Image (cartoon, rainbow, N blue to C red; front, side):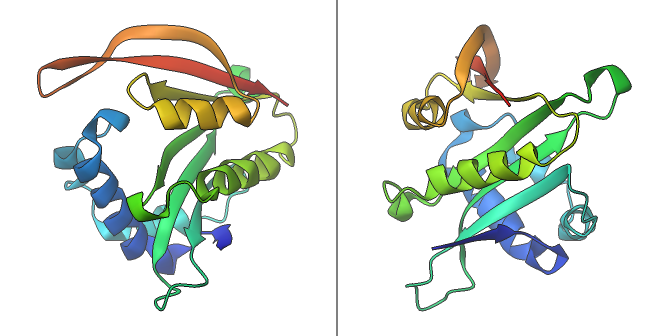
Length: 172
């Protein structure tokens, strides 16, 4: 497996993976399919092309796959930009394709995102939210050192169902 930072030329592959994630697991993400479809692939390319150290997306690729260019997992990170909040960064969009789960790909993505974030001057904490329906993701984050700091009841309504979210953080 290869984990690397995504660049502008990866935008279409990232978009397809994000589309798959939202289709296959709508309870796991705040963004809806309808919202994603309003964003052009070119917008993703622009975002990925910034090369900012404090705003990035990592992708995982299976070196054993006949199509080694096919992205099988992703995780995003961004640093808050307001002066009073620049000590905080956020993990977002974590997803691993179903047939590649259980192979420590998610752990590799989160570990690399945290390692990259640790290099950011002045960053003190990494935060994330995770749906309480996502047991494997919650366990992964806990195993990576994140701790629960709160619960937001009814954080999302998906197909009429209330979904709670846990807030988690990792002190750097």
